[in-house]
Length: 327
Image 1 (cartoon, one colour):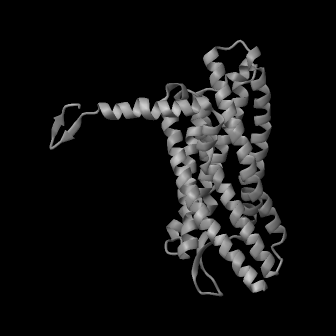
Image 2 (spheres, one colour; image 1 turned 90 degrees about the vertical axis):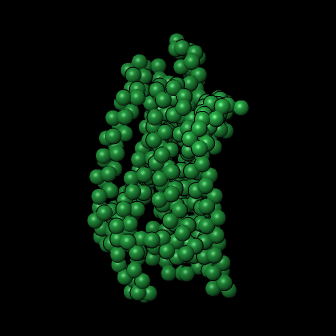
Image 3 (cartoon, helix red, strand yellow; image 1 turned 135 degrees about the horizontal axis):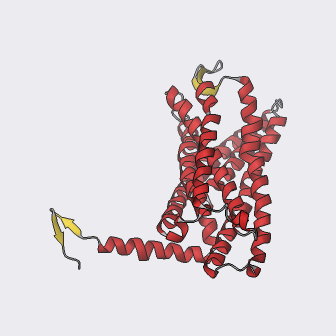
């Protein structure tokens, strides 16, 4: 009976990874592309520091979904993700996904802090919300995370599994394995972003309730309200997507010595489910913004049908090197 239960749990975990993962990848890449189209098409957004953070985050989220989640799906389906055949790919994929993850979370933390400063009544804090500072911060944090990930290029190697004789891509430095588990995964990927976004999100929510009392232009006031609502709802979703994976990681670390195969299979299924929920964080921003802001929905329709569709219609059609007249 326990063998059947273990097999069922393993099978369920694979199905969650395959079908849930494919759905998340497709929906996430499509949504993030639409995000970038809207953000880069409107001048009001292009000049806003919060939108700059969210645009960079959208680019990084696409990289995270394609470079990390998609290979996990391929590993589940074909029992290979390509890392065991190429040492360069073994090192670079994990190095690249680590940078995408940390920089994406950093961008969202900066966007939340930016909205707190933008909605604050103190002029000195409002002055921090400028596109020039945002670019400097992204460059600085990019440099930090690029250097931080160098041990991935050093310590990930091809090793031969003693039980099966197969080659696999794994980290060979035990000290850095512990650092990766307890610092990178638990703190940098989970606890720290949750604390920062929740804290500054609550303070931004308090500020947004005071906006009617501030003497600021109406256009700026409406934009701040829109962005704050979008960021706050994204904060709420990030709490429910990042926290379960962090909790399951802590539980699995505490039960690492548990030898009961049934318990291990249950933990593996929980990890598969919460990992998929974790990746929803990288796929959901567009859909969150659509639900949170009616103004964003109108902006999306305007950008797609008024700007880009009209521009496409106005382009001359060329057949056999001849420009055809507009119909």
